[in-house]
Amino acid sequence: MQFAGSRTRVVGYPCPATIAGLRWVATLIERNRKMALYECIFIARQDLSPAQVNDLLNTYKDVISSQQGTVSRTEYWGLKKMVYDIKKNARGHYVLMNIDATSAAVKEMERLMYINEDILRYLTLRMETLDEKPSVMMRVKTGRDYEREDQGRYHREDASPEVIVDDAPTV
Amino acid sequence: MSDYQSSSSGSSKPGQTFFRPRRSCPFTGEGALEIDYKDVKMLSRFITERGRIMPRRVTFVSAAKQRELAIAVKRARFLALMPYIVK
Image (cartoon, rainbow over all chains, first blue to last red; front, side):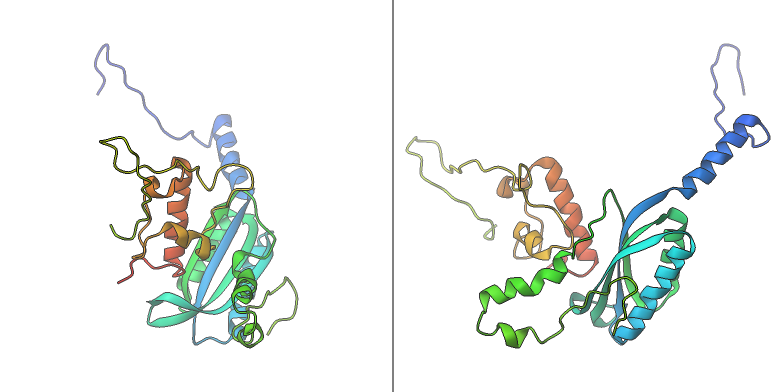
């Protein structure tokens, strides 16, 4: 209701039928084509074999690359003991990915992760820069060797995490 | 809280109880530590025995870095790399 002397402002979306409207629609499309950097970690349940985890990883890599994205660094931290149980799993397969893709691609990947019962948790973070060096998790063993030099050999046997490099054969 | 470190070097002035030398933020300055939610070893320096995040007045972390630190700890907790609470 408009009264004399009152100031009302109607805010809405531009109509796509106008030139300005078309320009606005173009920005929406443009925004979706922009690529951003993401770091994604997911935890797969402990009953899976490393090969199955690798299959999952490849599925998501395909999803990303099919939308013109790239997956650079991938790490497999192994079957780690979790600090608390998740869905009755005491341990889980941890996988890390560096992603350069559009938000639509990442959203699709997350949607598949949500649906998949084998994925217990996933966390995707938008990053300003991506670190391609091995993450802190891959350096754990060297720290421990420092403390127990005589037992270093023995303890290095258990659960050494593998670095799954892009396109390299895996377990 | 018994699990906070508190150093008291006695000051001879009456009325002054705890004197702590002022330390700088460990995350600021050249060659400083980086806050990474994956670095559990570094993050666990800033939580108590029960797994709670320590306040700034104990750890001398700057305000902005304390916010980053808290977010990192919470992410680590979500990924079951750190506990929410320790009994």
